[in-house]
Structures are given as structure tokens and as C-alpha cells.
Image (cartoon, rainbow, N blue to C red):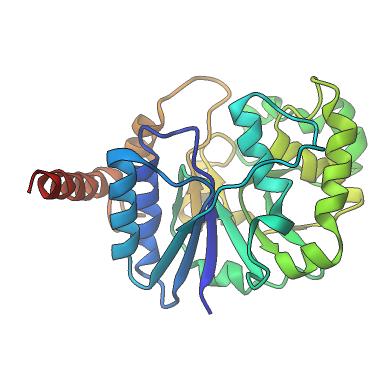
Length: 287
């Protein structure tokens, strides 16, 4: 049975295909086939290279899927929020019924561990599993808004989870009508422009008292902004998340973080592989 890995393309078109290559390269180390699903079919030169690289990845099947929000939903006009909405609001109808489970991975994330372990993880009856935010980097704890005020009172001791990676039991998600519950909560809250600032994270975390989240072990997602350097070696995935204290370009961050003894190939080595495929693509077009 293939492992279903889902990604949503849209915001980082200029270099998303490089991120996909990084993930696809790691997939080649798995002993299982991969079913990769992308919400949007990349077009143009970069899209053609993406298709080629994904096809070359060992035992990898992939398809591109487009869908639109139901008219009845409170509509968003901001592209980022639309993309966030697809990550959480339509999981029950976005995939064919024979797809029983999916793993969502952000485009700016690097896989170090075996996703088979996450795929086979017992969610203990929850429809999905997310990783709680790290709290081991002490100098950024002050930016974790869920530790105080409204969120602290609402969560009542439950953790606030990051949405960069999660696993969904689609059978239970559909059976328990989780999609309907999330959409109803979204309709209730989204009329207020000040609510759900981080839609794809805030909605499942807000809904925890009605729709339980299985908290994945912390090692499943390491992010430099929130996690200590000492815990990086344990990380199954590394997310190139934004730092609340300063801005840094994703490519610069990737070159800096994805290097050293923890990685079989550095970012720059994999970037060179991408350029090779890119040049081959250009040569084939000239022929």
C-alpha cells in the first residue's frame, strides 16, 4: 500500500520545485511506494522539472488535484488564507474515498526519518495527529502567544500544535464528520477578521475540545525558531519556519540549516542536482 504524502503548492512558486526535490530525494530511501498529491499542478519550466523529478523518484506515484471552495463557505480573498483553508477545511472531500490516510508535509520541510513510522503510528482514536510547538529554545518563548490570554484560557492545559506536518486518518475523519464540525466552527469564527489569524493552525487547535488532536512525539518536527540546537539530531523532520525575531530568505535558511553531519546531502548538493535536471529539461526543449 502506498504512503500518501500531501502538499499544497501556491505561495512559493519561484523555488517550490526545489523544496519538492528535497523531499522526493529522501523518499527514494523508503522501501514503500509513495503517492504524492499536490493541490495545484505546477506549470511552466519549473513545473515540468517538478514532474520529471517526481517521476524519477523510486516507486513514486503522483497526481495534481484542483478544487474550489463551496459557495456556502465564508469566502477568503487573501491567497495565503485560501491555501490554509485547503489544508484543513476539505480533507474529507479533497481525496478519493479509497485514500484511507494521508501525511501532509509543508513545502519548506526536510524529511530525515522514515515516514513509514509516522504512517503506522497509532493515533489512539483521534482523526489526526499534529506535533506540539517546541518550548526548548528559551529566548523565543515570549513569542508563543498561546501561553497567555485568550489561548491559554481556551486550551485549558492542552498543547498548541504546529500545522507544518500532520497525519490524518481519513476513514475516521469522514466517519466522525470532522469536516462538518471544522467548517461549522470556521463559519462561526471567520466572520470576525481578527479571528483565525493562522487559519490552518488556529482552527484545529481551537477545536480540540470537540475534535481531539493526537500529539505526535516532539521529534517529528524540529524548527530552529522554537527548538533548541541540542534536539536537532533527534529530528525526524526539519521545518524551515520563519523566525519571529528576524527575517531570513528561505533559500539562505536552507543552505545554513540543511548542512553538516546530520545530512547525507547538504542543501547545496541537492540544489546542484536540481540544476542538473533543469539543464537537461532546457536541452530537451531545444532538441
